[in-house]
Length: 59
Image (tube, rainbow, N blue to C red; front, top):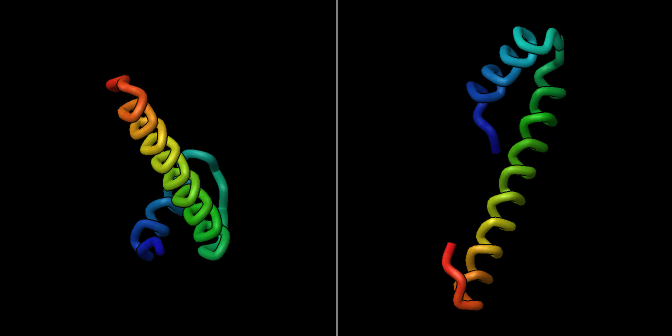
């Protein structure tokens, strides 16, 4: 779960930098999708690092 403060900060960034006026619900959906995306990237990186160690490669 993402804190309300972080969602409000994301909302402000989207408004100021991208001129998007979104509801808090829409910002929550975007924030959640970003969080899931980053978590997935971290899992992939972890798997690659572990795979490299098992194959004798160091990263």
